[in-house]
Length: 223
Image 1 (tube, rainbow, N blue to C red):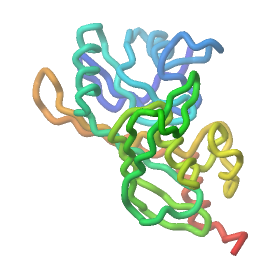
Image 2 (image 1 turned 180 degrees about the horizontal axis):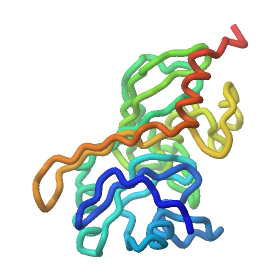
Image 3 (image 1 turned 90 degrees about the vertical axis):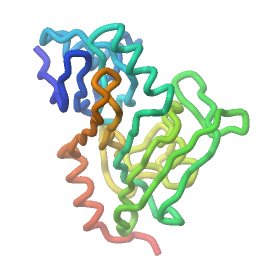
Image 4 (image 1 turned 180 degrees about the vertical axis):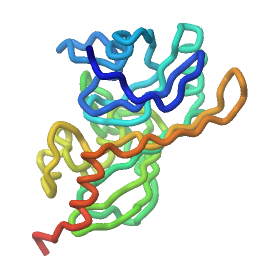
């Protein structure tokens, strides 16, 4: 039986779980991979994903416990009333150290790319630390396009470490297998039923803590 997922918050209408990298957010993928709903169902918890995290990304994921809750929570996302903050480790150093990436994104099948024909997309970023070949970033989604953070950083010339889908191996300054260096760190919203403010933080998984330590100790290999 699959190991149960860490639950960051349990409410009668929804859960917030800490999704590990490698697990799908939704069931029914063509490759039949394990999913959050499938893992929770094996432990008697029927849930419906409210939003998605890429398989290669970890962190806080909101799931509803019934159809009515799903509709109410998705309304929050449509109204952009959910604050989603990520931790990422990017190649190189963004300049300026904080700002917004605003490249329009065109969604195409399983991927996406920057295109003048795309939809507006905004990612706010702030540099937390600069290392020899990388920078730790706080990233906030102001819109919700497919693979938005990954596409924006790769297009800016600073792909996330571990990025194979968009980086063309420009991210190979540090080894990271099986995932991308992106973690849904914080999630905040107002509970539609009680009106209380919900704010949660998903701790960095061990492999990203290790990556961050290695980034701090890395030496610059090129001038």
